[in-house]
Amino acid sequence: MIDYSALADRWRSLGLEQWIDTLESLIRSRMSSSTHGDFERWKKVVTALPQVDADPQSLKDQLLGLAPWRKGPFEIGGITIDAEWRSDMKWARLRDAIAPIEGHQILDVGSGNGYYALQMRDAGAESVIGVDPTLLYVMQFLAVNHFVRDESVFILPLRLNELPGPAQMFDTTFSMGVLYHQRAPIDHLRQLRETLRPAGQLVLETIILPGDESSASTPTKRYARMKNVWLLPTRTELTTWLQRTGLRDIHIVDETITTSDEQRSTEWMSFESLADALDPEDQSKTVEGWPAPRRVIVVATSP
Image (cartoon, rainbow, N blue to C red; front, side, top):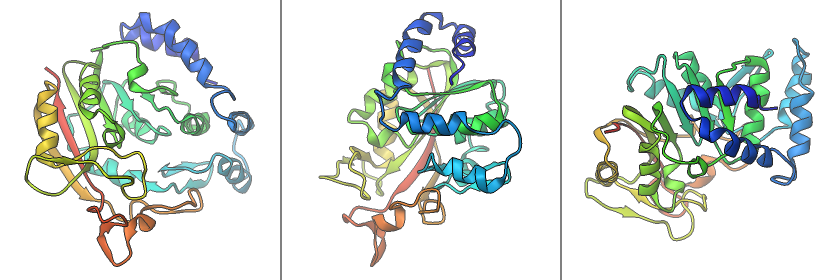
């Protein structure tokens, strides 16, 4: 399902030939029912997709077999995959706020189903390699790319720390919606920096706490109903983390409080979403009493 020959060529073009065998073996082991019990079901959906235009209702039924869809929207074969996140809204906020990515080799960490990776290609990136440990998202990308047919985008079932070592070969690295899931956020930032060539661009999107002081806090159990949220910094503390990692030219280019216009339940993601995570009496707080999600987009430059 993944074109390993094309992927090997991409590693070679990046000067990372030494990654080919190690990562192919790891990816093949992940693309199996031993990783997730639903893999064979998802595989049947992807391999059964039509080669030409299909009946929209039939196609919709097939693609709903890969639900829940978290990122989107996608327009495919006359249907709209109306995902939980209106990811086009975030892309609109950042696309003109970052340095141009035309001709860039890009690493997209926590890429999800490849929505942003495909936007990066449309913006002129030469290639995008996305890594995300959630196998369903990889299968969703393969389904979308069955129709898009972009041979320069790869979404791989990997974590950043599973890449064999410092690459220092990417022009731009994205990490969006990942940092607050890391138990050691500064280690994550350091690993991101090590993927970049000298003077390469980091684009980071994450949740912060309000306030001008330099501080960070960890939710006791959950944040906005999410169990895997660790350290939440203020913007001042986040800037300090980036500086300590060795990055420079640090700029916060956007700060937005997430609303239910951007993140909500849909037919394509019918489970709890943002509205269920906020205090019904005070939308400025989560159900646990924390400040509602406030997301920043930061750009920085590698040394």
